[in-house]
Length: 244
Image (cartoon, rainbow, N blue to C red; front, top):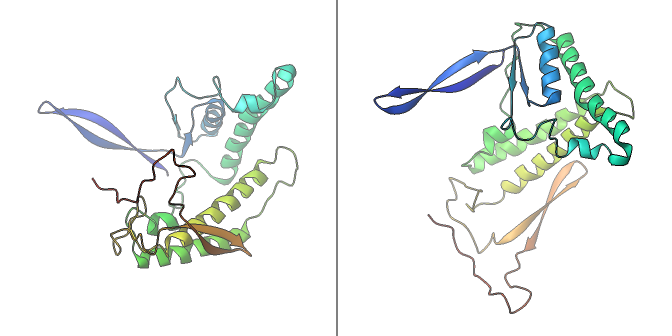
């Protein structure tokens, strides 16, 4: 079962300390808009002990003040039509999501724990050559496993399964390029921090890495860094290490 951890404050000697309280649920719905609310209602109706979490302050973005979703559905000249599409996307699809969860899972059922992904294991805050090489192997395995993805929905209209699969492919390709681009950069520069190469190398690494996805493999190329401005009005600043 998913476990949420909440922080509650306690006063200890005039100071506030934090106590972690574990709560166990059958399902966790992230997003407190209309879609999340309908999914939470549906899951609760199927007997799931459901947690309902907002991503933002309640007065921020949600279905009522949706800055993007409702505007992307149409315009004011088509108001009744695009409002219906918006409701269909938010409400009916979320209800179907809850029903699908109830088909494949049961309340109080123990779920297989999620494994850390390749990035969490190897491309963390401080890397080494060993962890980066392992990360390249793991992300390549993740790409190979994506061949097993299958689609049950064959529709060409409102096919969210197809969109999610395309998004998964895009994320995996970018993850592969990111991992393979990090491995040969044997230096520490800004967010790219390595424990085995702790300083920046402006002699051999002052260049941009270009990652290409070709034949389901990553190909790396490089482009020089432009060190001069396009005119004389702006002063050129030489490279300098960021120190604190």
